[in-house]
Length: 133
Image 1 (spheres, one colour):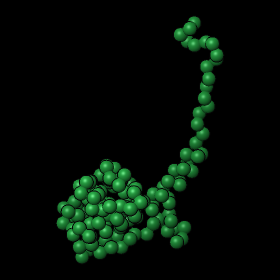
Image 2: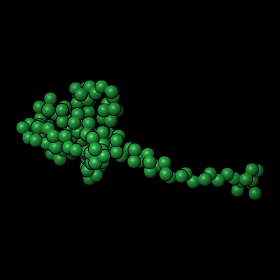
Image 3: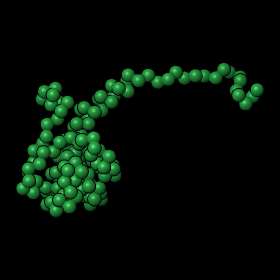
C-alpha cells in the first residue's frame, strides 16, 4: 500500500442488490448524522467478534440509518435489502471507516495533542487565601 493510499483510502467496490457501490470513507458532511445514528451501537461494533444478528435485533434501526448515510442512499433503499446484503454492506462501511480513522485521523490527532503544552499550574501562596484577609 502506498503512502497516497494511506492518506486517501481507496473505495471498496461492492455489488449490492444488483447495483455497484463504492464504499468510501465518510465525508465531513456525513459525519454528524452518521455519528448520531451509529453512537448507540458503538459498544457492539468494538467487540472482537460482532454478533450481527443480535446487533440488528437490538439496534437495527440505528445501524440501518448509519448505513444509509454512509452510502448516500435513502433509508428505504437500505430497508429493502436482503439480510445477507445488509450485513455485508454494514460490515464494509464499518471496515472502511474504522481503518481510515485508526490509521489516519487518530494518529494525526495524537500528534496535534502532543504538540499542545498544558498551561502552567499556578499555586497560591501558602497561608493566604482571598477569604482570610
